[in-house]
Image (cartoon, rainbow, N blue to C red; front, side, top):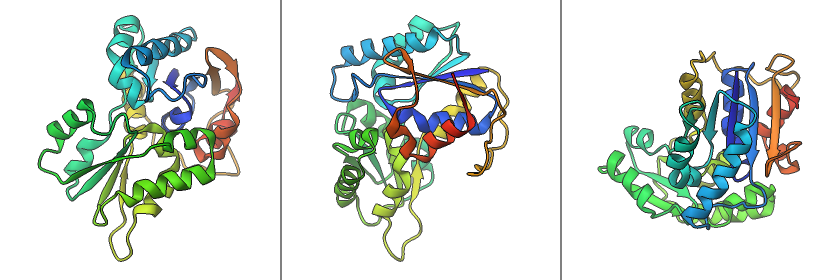
Length: 270
């Protein structure tokens, strides 16, 4: 089985690692657009054009499914990509985990890019799935860029700025950008208040990985324990990295995150 994932940058690492944990034998194709990243400030037409180019580069490797591991691209380009690639290639979009956050009860916040915060798309999700909940939308300028570059100081500043906008009684945080899942524990630490129950983080990686495997009829296994001393994938599980359509190694910043190190450790880079 082969699963492709696409994003503007390394935000796809979280979903890719989730696929690898669920099905360690799955070959992965990671297709991104580092020259065009970030996509958030771009026009919908520009995002769609760039996303289509990244998707087509991945499709040339004949995957069994394609995950759009990017909220911005899912908003603007999902319909176009499905029209172009389905039915022969199932396309799975990413939606912020607003529905499960609302179902859990209690006040929650949505951390997202400035372009997504307050957008008709996000407001519609809140209206449809969390109309009776106490929801705060928190813009996170610069956080995705800082994560992309693995800039520790910039990540700290962006997380602190967003945490300052987060109500102190928050029970959960929806991570509305796939890049944010790479620094999830830093976000949790920044919003956790002494004496209150642990803040719950709602990401999309596990759900979208499971959905992709369901779409291609793959039976998911129990999530594998990650042993730093040894791989969790059998020899031969391949990892193909496409940067702007060109085969490459994982970019250096990817190895700053546990998800990137996991993929590098358990994959035969092809």
